[in-house]
Structures are given as C-alpha cells and as structure tokens.
Image (tube, rainbow, N blue to C red; front, side, top):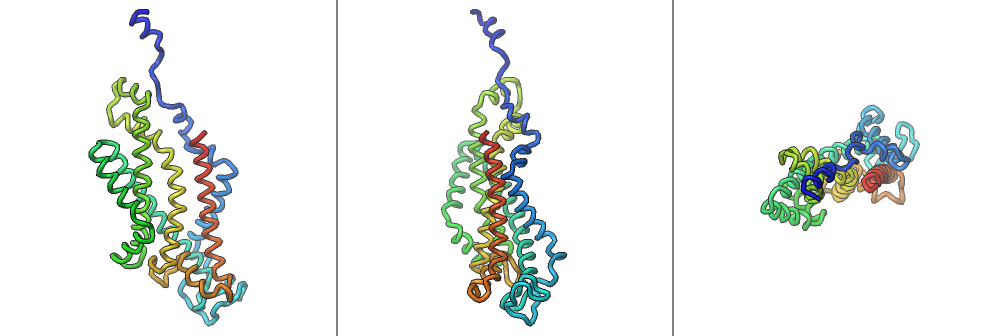
Amino acid sequence: MTPTAELLTAGPPPTAPKARSRNRHPYRSALATARARTGLVLVGVVVLAGLLAPVLAGHGPTDQSGQSLAALGSPGHPLGTDDLGRDLLSRLLHGIRADLGIISIAVPVGAALGCLFGLLAAAHPVVDTVVQRVFDLLLAFPGLILALAVTAILGPGRLPVVLVIALAEIPVFGRLLRGGILVQREREYVTAARVGGSSGPRVLVRHILPNAADPLIVQIAVSLTVAVFIEGAMSFLGVGVRPPEPTLGAVLSQSMPYLAQAPHFAAGPLITVTALVLGLSLIAEALNREIRR
C-alpha cells in the first residue's frame, strides 16, 4: 500500500475522551444517587443550621445565665447550658457557623495554591524538583507539630487555623494536579491537538486540565472532611480559635470534665461533627465512583 493510500485509510486522529461531553454538567449523575443525596442532606442541614445561627439561637453564644449545667429541655435552654451557664444550643449553632467560615476559606486557599504549584511543577523539570522538595517539607511535619508551630508564631485565633489547614492541603492538591497533567499530556488526543496546530496554552486549557481535574473534585470533599478534624483538634487542644468564641472543638473540649454529670454537653458537637463528616464522605464516595466508571 502506498503512503497516500495509508493516509486515506488511517481514519481521523485521536480526540479527547468522550467523557468530556458527558461532563458538560459535571457529576450530575453522581449527585443523583441515593448515597450522594444522603450526604447532601446531612451537609445541607448542618450548613443551614450554621447560616441561620443568629435566627435560631435564642441567646448570644457568650451570654451567661444563673443555670449551670442545666439539663436538656430546661426552660429557655432546649439543649441545656454549659458549666458557665451559657446556652448550649446557641454555642453549638455559632460553633457550626465559625467552623464553616474557617474551612470555607482554608480549603479553597490550599487548593488554589496547591494547583498553582502543581502547574509550575508540571511545566519544567527544574521547577518540579524544587516544588517536590517543598511538598516533602510540608508533608514531613505531623499535623499537630505544624499546628503548634504556627500557633507559637502567630498565637491562637482563626488565622492560624486557616493557615494550618491550607498548608496541609497544598501538597495534596499540588501532587494530584501535577500527576494528572503528566499522565494526560502523553495521551494520543493531546498529540493530535498539537499536530493540528493548537498552541501549548490552548492544549493545556482545552484538553489536559479538564481531564486532569476529576480527582481534584473528589479531593475537595475529602479535604473539607479533613479540615473539620483539624479545626476540631486544634480547638480541642486549646490552640485554635480564642475563647470564649465557640467552635465545635472548643465546646467538645469544655464538656470533657462533665461527661458523667452532663453527657448532653458533649452530645451536640459530637453529633454535628459526625453528620458533617459522614455527609462529606458520602459525597466524596459518590463522586469517586463516577470517576471510576
């Protein structure tokens, strides 16, 4: 067969995976599953409670009454009060609000910086070496040591919590995106796009990044779960948000001496954290199954 005949019978060049056309409405089928809907309901209830905290709470989170460790169903205090007479329902709702504010800033910041470093690492081998060493350095510190170090420098407060969560997420998102780009740019459809005259930035934006982004979507849900644990642990250890501002971890920490006397003190934050983590985990699992289909 002549070269001309071979060209005529070779067929069209490879194109990007057809999955991209399905993903014009990303993950709609995944979020329509019973697993994802259950997760969305759990997360939605917690988020709604936090957003409506000023409306639902009948008292300020730091207002004190004369009833110390009031029982469940006490007049004016449906969930009782803490050891200082502060309304537990109000502190729980405002604690949810504080936690949501922290993780809604920290995770996007960590994801954005991680993706930026991941792009830089995938662009040039020398930059890749430097970025990988930075990631190794961040991952070398246990979360507790990192939290204590940041708090020792900046003092307790919201900013250190946001910074610790963001630093923990930067290498995770960076390595995910770097790995995805390195895999996708070796695919045949990328080579075909380059042969067809597409510029490097166009190939990156139109072909490589959309196909490399799937694991990042799942990681966002996972990172939100991790952020809840980090914030709770820091507040529980007293290196998080400054008291008397409530967070779920702070309320749980304050309840520890009274578990036998007033178990309802710890029930609120425990149930809330469980619902939030379970909901996010269900969403992440549903999205992950969609990717692996």
